[in-house]
Structure formats: C-alpha cells, structure tokens
Image (tube, rainbow, N blue to C red; front, top):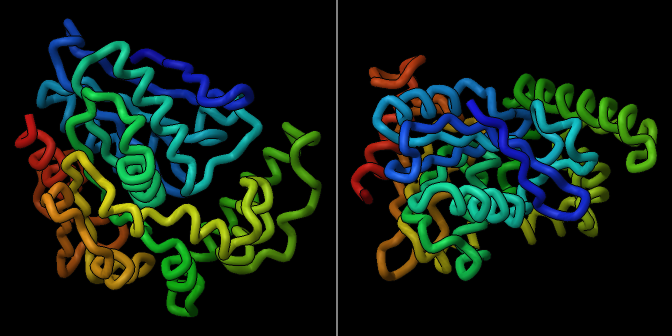
Length: 289
C-alpha cells in the first residue's frame, strides 16, 4: 500500500491510501470515498476495495480532510459540499493511471454526485463512471430524518462521534477552533448550524444544506452514475432520492431497492462481509469498461 498526499488547497492536505496492481497504468483505478464519521478504513470501503482489487482494479481509498489517519495533515474539517477536494484527488490519480471511477458511500456519495454535476467541466477526461450508495441528496430532508425520534440511537452515536472529533481538533488546532463550541448540540441540524456551517463558510445549516445538496445537480451529470439506495433506509428518505429529475441522455441510473438499510445491503455477495452493494457497484463500473 502506498500513501499519497494530495494538496487540495494551500492549507488542506489529504491522505489517500492506494493499492496498485503490477503495471498499474494498464488497470482501471477505483477511488472510494467514505461517509460521515468514517475514514479510508471503513468496513464498506474495505469490502468494495477487496472485491475490486481481486477483479484487477487499482484501489485508492480517500480520507476526506481531517478524517481518519489524515486528521494530522489538515486542521480543516470536511463537509458534504467539498467537491473540490474530490476533484483534486482525481486529478492526482489521473497523473498516475489513465482510467478512473469513483464510489462514494453516504455523505461521500453526496460529495461524489455533487462533483459529477457541479464540477463536470473540471473532471479529468479519464473518469469514465461513478456509483453512490445511500447518498443524502437532500441534506435538509436527511438531517430531519436523522433527528427524528425513531432515529434517536443513530443520531446519538453520530453526535457523540462528531463532538469528540471537534474536541480533538480544538485540542490539536486551538488557533482554528473555539473551545466548547460543540457543547449543547443535541441534533444533527444543530451541530451543522453551530459547527459544520460556521467553520465551512456557510451562513448556517440551511445555507449549508441548500448549497451542498447534490440532488439539484443530477441533471448536469455528464458521466455514467449509479445511484443506489434503499426504501427502508432510516436516514435517507425515499423521496430525497427519487424526486430529482435525471439527465435526458440517461447518464444517471437510479435504483431504489425495497430493503438494504443505510449502506447495509446485507445479502449473498462475492465481497467480504456479505456487502451486496459492492457487487452491484463493481458490476455497474465493469460494464462501462
């Protein structure tokens, strides 16, 4: 495994962990983007990566800014609207291998879909396709779903991780983060309003959600894209995936399965952990080759 450092901005460095096939330039490269609270070592990304590598792909697993082992490289933290970071990583990989694809999970799926739509003209020509699994294409609707009483356990776990991560960043980068600002945040929307939007340059959670949701950008997508979601996802309402118009030329394939949960899709699979979504993503991308 090789660790690549990508300079996305003057004060933002990203860590990408790459596993190369022999004669890597002869093989397509799959870039995997994690979700909220995740990293390059997340189980879904590792499962998909193992399946892709066994199938002859190079595999690169991206840590979004301030995430995972890349936390020490950047004091800035990621959010759902940082499609420029993804473009920077794709540009770096395009200098190493000619054919690229992206797979994004959950929040990383929104970043991926957003980049394909909003940054269509800036994407490297070798990017031939992408897939997103359980993406929050309407961030506001998904935040409300996550904050609903039925999701109290999910919300509590996420908030605990987010507040802990904020405290670590405040300890390590005290010049960037106000001590105690995370206290009293009891909902995802509240955390996004007080932390994510404030440090991301937005005018509050509503502005952050409106400017960073990928759904309105789907009609601008010019590369093949698979949108894979489940109707029983407790965090991603079906309407937040199904209601967006798609490009007339058919670039975007939307699949809503009856079951699958949130990035679950537990079923017989060739991928480790019976993660069926990995099979579907790789089948879609292999067909494009």
